[in-house]
Length: 178
Length: 431
Image (cartoon, rainbow over all chains, first blue to last red; front, side, top):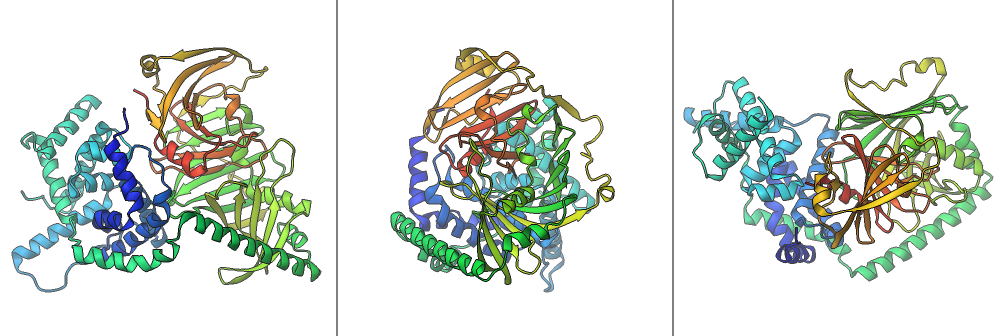
């Protein structure tokens, strides 16, 4: 496999331009951490920590055929795991809005929270795969590159993640609506 | 469901998600569930929020935004100041008539069965997950067991009992058993207890002592030569001990010329009479687990031949060889060589002069045999399993992992541990 010169140039550019790196990837790191931590505010705070670390470390990374984003996700995953470990529990239950909702809106909120709880129950690896492929919409080839796994392994893992999500939702008596 | 069918459903699910196939059957149902879950997780993070977060982060990173050379020079001056201060304090502490090393040695108590719990942290945040090691050490040296945990789950265990070594790799679901430390590349270096090493270093009475504050409490910092034996790699221990109990709280190993990669925080240290430690030295692996026997060569190891493999031949090796891809840090894979010894064979993958990957089973290649006197560090990998880092007698850094029935060692004479760690994370089957 040849190193892609375009990818290498992009890697160098992201090493040199912290602002551009931040603007390009901060939002997706927040979204990823939000599911991992079960809290949007904690996610934003930790994402900032990830980028402060990136400022120190990314300029010294060596090109290994993978984008800087792969490093960002790895560091975010490790920091999230440490945060969860310090809390002494896997995830906090997401807060449900306390205001009054119309009946159909309530059903949506309940389903949404059930889906988020089911996502939070997935293993960190499965959460990352669902996030990369489904939330961010990266193609499988890119997901494989970001996670350092083969495309086939990513597809198998996503199948297992889907089944687990389905089981969790069925336990709560919720069927995902089309 | 058979694996082939599983793969077929997984591929169909991928096609449905890619929009290349209509969603029917299980693949269709799962695609729907996954999409709904993704919708629920798709938090809006607007441009304004990104800009605000960037503005908040910039003041924190701006002070460090100096030219690299200047930063190095500044840190060198800072280090010199710290060392100078430490030397002055060491003089003052000694001048005060306190025998810190003697008190620290006495605090460890008489040698019995020790239970030590340590937290292994990366020096660079996020480099690897924080893990905990719990060790039981019989001070007669005949029994040692270390269990390693990540987020409360055991990931590895190593037992030395009557000279026999058993390694339980939980991610690989295998116990590798060897009749002696020589059956493993890292030898028994991972079983060297940092506390025991610290105890030995204290006995040499060659440390430098300074008074510091550690986590708000008064403490001493000892800089000790880890060992001073000929033909061994040089490392230093920087140990922070509590000023009241004189027990160690933090141990950092420094290898001259290499940036620190991890540090050990001692969270528990207790001494027990032997009778009270019954059951502590059980490896506790599930019944029916795969056990691989390693054979340490009982005679002098002799190389009997080398065969360069073509890329096609290398891909046909079963089980597949582990490699770090067709190139590493711009150095292309130059050769794959099957090396035959009188007691077995191994595979050498050479990436220029910067990196070598060894795959081996029965024979430990002489190039990766550990320095017997320098402890290894076991650090969890993000994809499961642990890596054992150790130094060779030549001072090269080696990271060794178990992959199925084989051990894989990545050796980089000039690499930092962080680089070796990255290479190990990139290991994949050569197919």
